[in-house]
Image 1 (tube, rainbow, N blue to C red):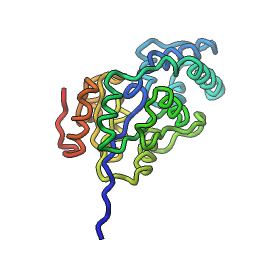
Image 2: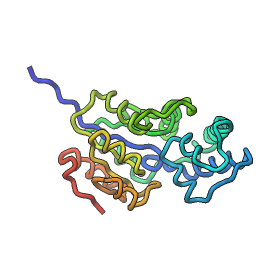
Image 3: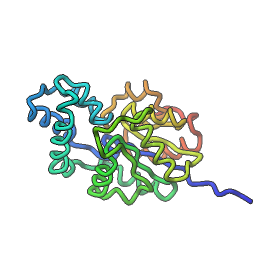
Image 4: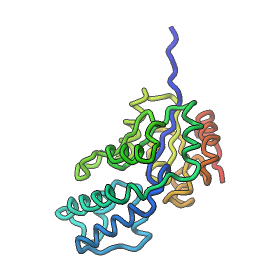
Amino acid sequence: MSVPVSRPAILFDLDGTLVDPAGSITGGIAASLRHHGLPVPGPDRLHALVGPPLREGLRSLEGVTEENLPAVIRDYRARYLSHGMAASTVYPGVREALTDLGGEYRLLVATSKPRTLARHLLQRQGLDHHFAAICGSDDDETAPVPAHGTKVQAMAEALAAVGHPQRAVMVGDRHFDLDGAAHHGLPGIGVLWGFGTREELAGAGATALCGDAADLPAMCRRLVRYGHAGQPAL
């Protein structure tokens, strides 16, 4: 009796990969810190906060303590819901790439963003229908971080949701995405239109680098077929 083979899966990060936050993350963090009378770091430091869980990034900033952290997060999320989500835009070529890949692969989202917020953002952008599962971090942003990190956990949940396919690829813009891919033994594509640099993504072991979303479907197909044997592009 033959066992049916599930369709391969393509996992996507969210902010910086599918959706451009358009300054809503960095600007929102700066506004929340300022509102609470806390020092606001420079642009490079703020950009580095896009990718990891918000609570972990905030804990690394001067003046943020365990006591004021919940209030800073609440203020940031309130601003994001009222203004930031509407300011976000889908990166050029992403809709077309998802439509192209969706007929052949199971598409999944694995993000460090709280899962309910991620689903709302994708719904607002009209992308949610592309995905078989949308997985993120705990909606309680003061909850402890999973032992292997939120990205690894979100990827595990996404893969489990589609029956742990034998072949899968991770797509993201930060080293966290590629670290998660390595943890799960997957090839990873680093996209260059987000927040990670070419050096960061190459240093994190990207199997391929993508500078244009129009090239993403072909890269995904190549890595699904050849896995880690695929050669870095660009």
